[in-house]
Length: 404
Image (cartoon, rainbow, N blue to C red; front, top):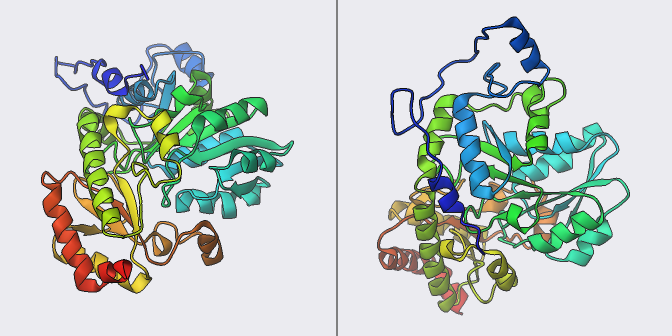
């Protein structure tokens, strides 16, 4: 692909108020107007370049939004105070009472809970399907369907969505395709493949230091402006705002995202191959054994690899917990939710990030008790890390069980 997301970020140049190499931080909650009519026009949505109130937007938020839109190749973007603060207003802006959503069955637990338990209060219904089967997706579409929703690489099972195929379905049925690209920034560029809206939890890889929350909605200028409308904009009215200090911090971290994603992917690919060679049941899109390996390969920006996420099956929750506790004790990483940190993070998603999904549905989708999700860190000597993990697997009996 000719699209160069990292170049698009690098080409953005902002000067601070006094010539600083980083843009000045707008440390204000409200903004002055020289003319009363300008304030009126801003409330009416008829002025560009004027700032009203920090819940609506700030210069710092616009800098970050511009960088994220450049990364995804969309007209505009709106940042939020968390990933869910980006997801929920987007879906509520697109859907109202009586509308229907077709969603991947394997998505972040918070998104699943929102669609399964919260939106029915507003008479918005969701059908959860195997997003990798386009015929099943199309069969779930009804006359009331407004949105197709998926994750580029799903949380936690690492299923890969055929975004080109889904985009064709969305166009055929006049739907909006919304793609959460949190697991694969730079590696996959959904808007270039036909997605209408791209969402990220900035908390994860994009920020990369596990010190703040954030979210973004990337899309057309019209849609982003509709989210921020003071009259009926879901982002504006639900208050999912980002603080300017956090925006400036994330923007600085974005400058190293391309370097970090390459290392995350390199390390994850190394470990995935080693684990699979040991006979451990391993899921990683970069493995030829992954059922959607070729789909990912057809969509990817090759320089950034197959991402930093992988899963293994330890055989049981007891063994999974023992392995994670020992890996933490041996300083492999942290037993913690989230992802994209410089250190490896691991958790058992069935009892953590996907615990909102009922047990019977976890079983149906293949989310086993022994599943461990890894967010692989930026380790310089990944062979050393592998040897440490292998010893831990042997100590708790995971490796012997798998080989037997």
